[in-house]
Image (cartoon, rainbow, N blue to C red; front, side, top):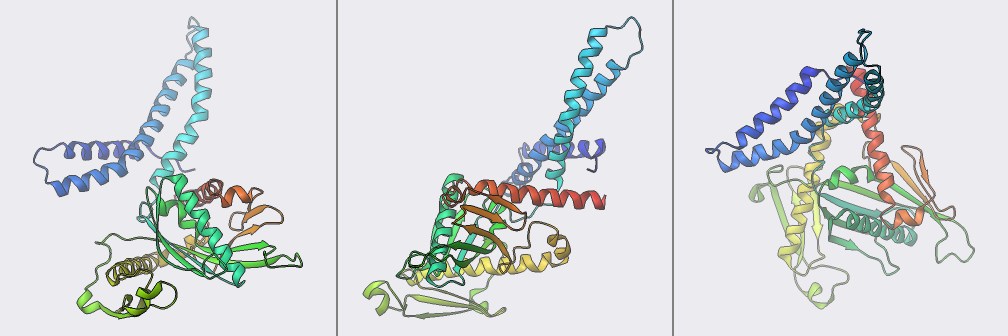
Length: 365
């Protein structure tokens, strides 16, 4: 792994200290304080990691001087103690340097964002819809374990149960950073409840995790950029839904992107939810455009986030879950579907992505 120079470490700590000093200025405007606070929050963990590397290196150099003395009258016991301490520091230093290197890797600006979670039933008919429901409950329970909040935006639920399509907003700390590798095709192998012959069926559902933008990220002029149509909602919802123009269809004229929303009885609420989805999809399209130049690098990592890519298989007869991107198989399917076990899969995906990016950094440097 490429070693980080003492000059770079000093620069990191100096920059953190400068930002902290500027935050203490009495004449600082409120908006500048907010900007500096965000910058400090980003710099502080990097500076802590840099300080730890510097400390270990300095202590190791001091001990090497102590242990390498050629004074025959020197304290033999002190030298032996120095040798033992040196061995400990040498074992700790690589981990500290790796932690710092990870902090210095280019960050996805969307990692700290909330996310829009979209799950759609794929091949497999009713069984695919039931599986989509299982996946949604898995993410709900995982979010609960993480202390996140899940807000249902829209759902198309067939009579058999599950979802043909479900969209939810997930908010909390580091949501997109942990869920972004879930995008892709999830496959299930099991005996459906309606199968009398006991045959195993294969069904699929598609998961998309999109970072939600802030208002400043996507500028929309409703007067010139949007065509908003209202109409009567169809499907379940009772008499009120069927007799009022509560459903909303928004067309983004510059791109042709269309979003419809009819889950709420209120036209105002449907419009607000539709606009939220529209902003998210426009933001994701812009992210994909700006990252296209990194396409070759992305292929070397865990996955591109392509929704057509088969990423995971849930095999019920064998009680296993296999993530095909990193060849990880865990025989704890019930625990994973209950939410807490999913964290081991996500942690492995993040570790693989970090290892790939560190390897690219070493190759470049």
